[in-house]
Length: 117
Image (cartoon, one colour):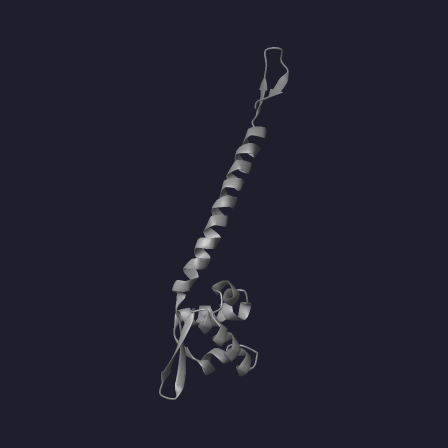
């Protein structure tokens, strides 16, 4: 079954595994040593990450090494970027509005304070 990359990053354990493997390839035991869950649980997370295409496993002698393939995260990056732009525009509009209502008061000819808009 081919899984979605969003499913892979939804779990904090899998995100930690991705971060570790982004630094260097590790064998399954080295990955499992960093968590307080069972080795089978880590193997399940590794399987999901492999199915999503975020890691590959290569055999080297008796050891199986996991290596990060972060290219698939560009899909996530593009999806997040559209919302970052959306919120940036909204916050810029809010800033403009707040600036407009906080302009200093101006004294008119009659000596009365009047807000500038």
